[in-house]
Amino acid sequence: MLCKIIPEKCIACGLCQVYAPNIFDYNDDGIVILKNDHEALQEFVHESETTNAITAYRKCPVRAIEIIEN
Ligand code: SF4
Image (tube, rainbow, N blue to C red; front, side):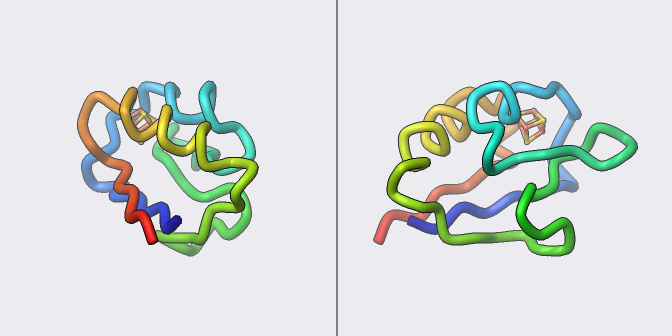
């Protein structure tokens, strides 16, 4: 499963990090970044993290997270 972030849409609500702290983090302005690579806009999600990633995707109020199943 591929997880993408769209920082331009992010409103810095903090929810994705609550639901998937191993995937999401924030920059100094509270805007979403990927925890494992702060420059990346997408990453493959480990199987053990897929449930968390999907929950974060569903909870994001502005659809700044995209999930692509494979
Ligand atoms: S849940 Fe969405 S809007 Fe909130 S911090 Fe995460 S990416 Fe940004």
